[in-house]
Picture 1 (cartoon, rainbow, N blue to C red):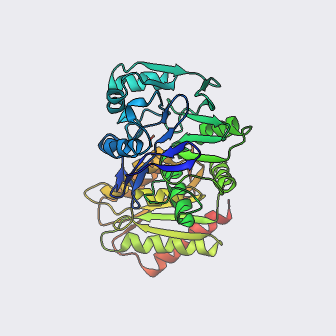
Picture 2: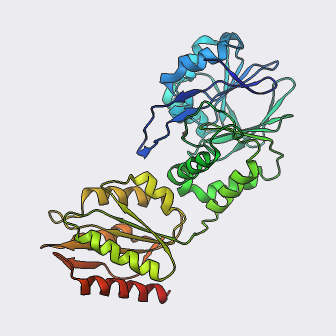
Picture 3: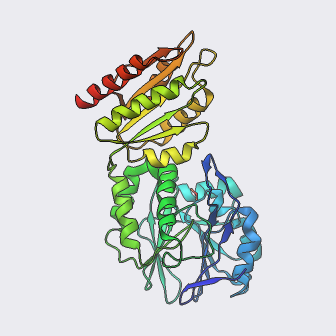
Length: 390
Ligand code: FEO
């Protein structure tokens, strides 16, 4: 458990959680890392801490380069416990440590979690000299909580970006030049879609605030560190913030006896006929967080559910709740479903999707029992017409 040098006098001292599979509802199939960084200067400084169960791993990495009791300063960029959980432990070891957090929200949130550890609030543009280096603080509220800030260090031009530019991606490689880069991009997209997406406007403001800075290294609080591929990850963030669409169409459904599934395929045929790239997700097999990652850049979403005991299926209700909380761009939607009697689910799905950001292409589509070939062909024709009328 050694510190990993990432620049002269700057070390990664975080923790790797190979086994993390759920991050408040987000399936993290590649695990994650909780990144903390140690700066050896006249003032020994720790940037962020780690989730509480990983405090001994962080301590061992710090101890591999310096006595942990010599830490003078902790910068807490974000109070969520995956980055702050080990703060009381560090405070107990480095008794005189000063803990800096964003003025207002950062101090308030840390106080709520850990009581008064003597926090110092810092405002936008405020600087702190460590000796040879200077830290400057930039608030980035709602990327991902109200308290978030990033810390910029000169002369190395390192941006400690906390949740921004992160990925839930466990690996022993720390840099973008060493890791499986395509996987890092996949996980960066999934992270943005599942954590940051509802706050695209605030993320855009954060990107604007950082635009004038020369950044040679981005050190997020999860996943790999961006060095050579900073332009690429910045370009991806700009496209996500701008809510740019691709040509995919998302079809999400559950099914009891394959009737709603047949309707999903009828919708698929319509999207194909209109030159779109449909993607189908049976909720029995697909996780909400993977669908959200794909849905982020789709202009169209269709959701189907059979009626089960006068309701949509619980899997569909779960997806709609997750989607409603995260969807960041405007979409057109379809609601559909089969039924035996009752038949409430398509209208429930319709109401669950309808919002200022999500407008219907057609009224809810419903069919009793097993749909015939003619009925499925009519669904395809109706959806094609609705798409052509756009
Ligand atoms: Fe990685 Fe908002 O915590």
